[in-house]
Length: 71
Image (cartoon, rainbow, N blue to C red; front, side, top):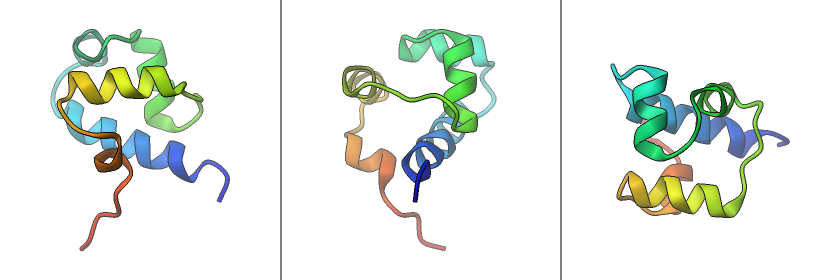
């Protein structure tokens, strides 16, 4: 179970980034590109404040980030 939420966050961010570069997407969500890279691969812990900021900038709620995908 350890790291399960970090992996979900990483998958979510990769999907949202799409074709944008790490740098472009990182600027959009207000973090550094190196932090974004670590979040995407699941090695970076994140604060609640940063998570809330990312959700606000992506216009979604935190629950959406961690919901189970079907199919």
